[in-house]
Image (cartoon, rainbow, N blue to C red; front, side):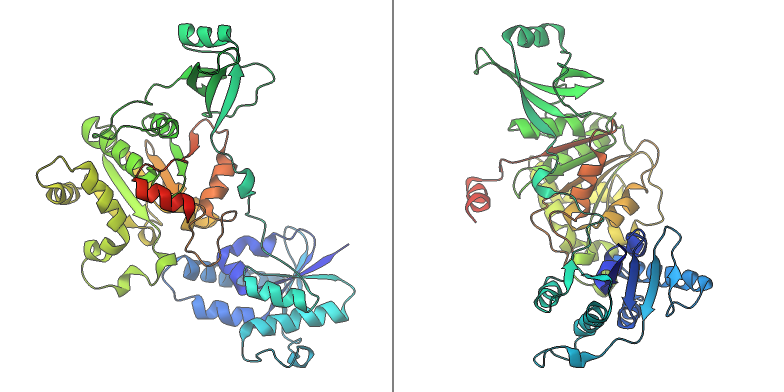
Length: 433
């Protein structure tokens, strides 16, 4: 049965490709949505870019016919811009007639009451979904780029092995997995002896074998892993064959600190990469950097302060930690950049760290990862349960989406860190609050 989907503005601003995500069904866009998209098109951030993409896409579809009459979409289904059904009298008297959301409700309610089609309002606005449900309208979030966060790949697991297998692992420095074991490329395991639970080993699955960690206990710029998850993270960060690393976990688990220490080790000590490039999303936190006074470095300072704090901790043994940071920036070895200015670049032979990646949309992650040039390694760190973006959650953010889509790839590795190492106070806060 053909269904009718009424799209809210925030769905298109979140993912411009949402127009083509509903298979052979009917897509209806209220005219008010076009007005809202027009209001956003001048923004110099990801929302503004998506607004312009939607406008260009709709303009291209005009070649197929009048959008108000409806046109067939290339991938199947149809698209129509609704210009008629704005009868707000169908809504309860208590509803504010001046709010744009309620125009969308009116369109969805009209189609629901006057059509034999199954009508669903698609929006990322929680309150709009609640109001639609009260009025008897089917409603849902945009699920095309969502993953099941509760089942999100952690990058690590446990395997019970016999004492003979554990001895073989220590002796031969490898162990072939049993046929019944399921493992992804670069997944980590704690091998536990069935006969003696106190005996165990840490292993990484690579090239169809379980192998010992090579970098798990490596000290990078004075930073040493403190628990097994941090050892797993160090293994990925210091392995030059792994080009994409994702580290997820609560505040204080060491994601950013480990990534920075590994990047500095690879750039300054091993000279394997020419530069350490650190970036963070700015858009979800407020206005574009251009609205802040000062030079580029001064504008970036508020957003990059957590990076500076970690750098200062790493360089704490130096006589002048801040001066050393300034020297690295002045010589071009360390670069701080806003994601706003990453698009269009090609970045070869660099160690890239994208911090707070949970505030990226899947499209923004794609934009960043496609900037990676030859010989570059990119690391994404973040906490999917601490999101500032108004239309993202733990299941729809770009970090979670990438972890699930990339798992099993030979060039990628992921670890979820769980134990706080910042301080006893920070660990208590993360655990109890």
